[in-house]
Length: 161
Length: 295
Image 1: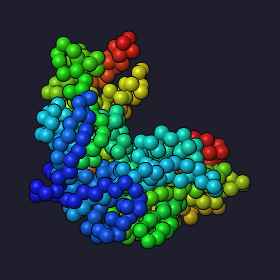
Image 2: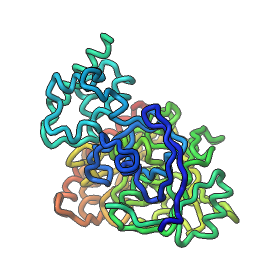
Image 3: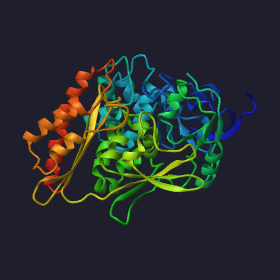
Image 4: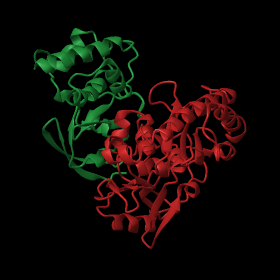
């Protein structure tokens, strides 16, 4: 099965990549295995857990429910595009650390990529809006309360700029 | 898991897609939002030899008023876009109310209106809406075009009137008359899960306040969207009132739906939910109808 390859060009976190992919390669596996951007995590592979959420043209989508070949020409943002240095964390990441919004951290990249556009659109969300926004992301550690706190803190910090 | 290998086509125009479909229809699947198809492929429950990806075709995602005052929605319209569209909120309030119940926000960012209808999952929301509102579906093939009523489109579990060479390209929603009332209700174990039970209610009141049209359509209640015709008939000609809702809900829940039960809900519990949700939906729909269709 080497004949059936498609050439694709994508921009990930501002950097351009051109690769040959089999149509059946999931976008999540393309990011992790082909581009070696392992910040995007893979949980359920059927769209329930939200761990693999990335931004496609700024919109949060499940990267396990898209084929890499479909992203040809598209611009993607993964968690590596936020702040990949402990000294230069994004305010959203900083708030997760400060409010204990993570324990094992497996779900965190998906939460962050879901919340980034949410907070841009809703700079001052209510608790109900926060819970609705994260309804598509599962966390098995925190019980969600600290994640909700982290989002509220991020909203406050990001408004202050 | 990962999907098995397949051929991938990405036509740039509808004509190209329809030509490919007429050549490969029996072995090909159309890839729209992919939010049901790709998980099914990841599980290897479906293994199409070919995918025809229609996401690069322009013009399949428009939302516009029809000459009759209804709405026409392109099949490739993302659910999230429809959810936020002001025309939909104003002219198709039941659709506006139904869409947020579909899965999660990230799924609705990719999932399409046409994809969900063509998939025809008996537990999904849009087929129920389609029958409640008597929408029409425009099906195209390379050779022809035809319109199908929602009532005739759904033919059982994951089965529709679409022929192998046909594509759903647009839906048409009739206008809402004054005196119309609506409600969508469902119960899920967690936000975004498949519903244990749910229904769409649509009614119309005549000038004297009596019910002139009624639709009660249930999801996860049989091998397709289930209409409760007997319960609908109990409402017709009557003024909506609590004394009427309870017996109608009982008839619908006990004898007109055919839920399968699951590890999460026994058949008896699903019938209980149907009865409770029906009363709730009828109360909301009749209040809205009396208030002149104000949500």
